[in-house]
Length: 152
Image (cartoon, rainbow, N blue to C red):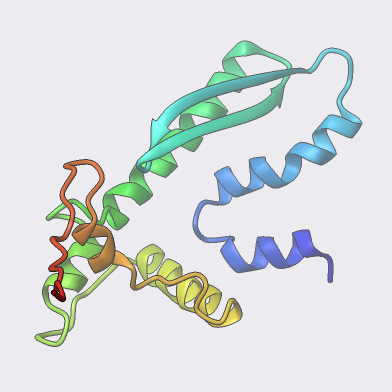
């Protein structure tokens, strides 16, 4: 089993279109005809900067693929946005230890894969880092106060 195949199996449901485009790029670059061109667009998405590159024969096809990819990222961001009070992730955090929370298949699948990644990296990838991220909120420049004990 190749690394690409394992990656496809591991994250296939996150976004078939987005992942498919990303995995197909090396193949498309090596097999593209002279009428195909490379299109790239960069936008902010999911609290970072995302660049999407597609190979297409027409501007219209390329723009449709790029827009569909960003739409899927936006859809997932709405489910997984740690900072939004209306996201499924926030509901899980709000009711942790209180009551079960019904979530979409995508959210559940991503959580399962995040736990798997944490296990495979012996905790180097930590899906539970949220409280620490909120404590050290770079966006609002909110940092925990450290008490210092002085010895005289």
